Amino acid sequence: MATNEDVLVRIESVEGTACVVRGDDIDTDRIIPARFMKVVTFDDMGRHAFADARKEAKGKHPLDDPRYSGASILVVGKNFGCGSSREHAPQALMRFGFQAFVGASFAEIFAGNCTALGLPCVTLAERDLAKLMDSVELDPAQTVTVDLRAKQVRSRAGEMAAILPDGVRQQLVEGTWDATRVLLEAGDAIERTAASLPYVEMPGR
Image (cartoon, rainbow, N blue to C red; front, side, top):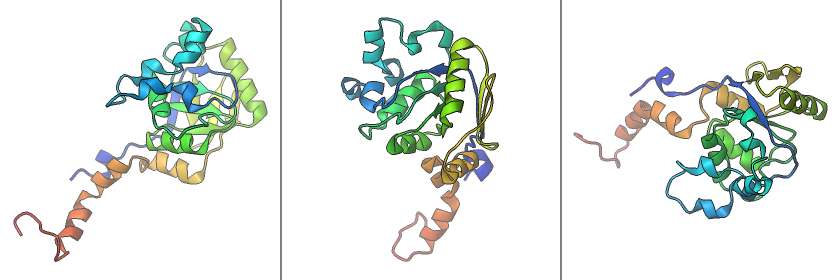
């Protein structure tokens, strides 16, 4: 079996350019409309992120703004990801290219689904978030860093205290956010336990 170092993916920070999507209570139906969920895999879902909102904006939605092209951090408002519990919303955003989210607050299930995908959701104080949004809109080319170890968001707007639950932070920085990888890492221990049970048939036993 692979060792812990070989298997677990630790997420200590995310660095890149950012994209600002303003507005509160943006729900999962708006993030990924239901008609795009009739698929077997998530592979192509990224291109449908915010499909209706982008259509309504007629090319002026932030996700279609060339200034934000290639952004890896999405900056949002309050209660982002509310509504249904569908995993498709963070899947669509991840496949669009976002690797982390910074906002005022996140719907609990959305944040949990993000953690399961290795996507940090950190919150900022209202004043700090407003400064970050203004700064990114003024200079979309700047580098923004979401530092989970230091619990900071850094940008041209300054160093800001990032808030996320301790348990979630620990999962991300230790690599235990990925349940499948944790299971693979524990493979030898699982096989030893199975071999010790009289009611489990092991190959060659």
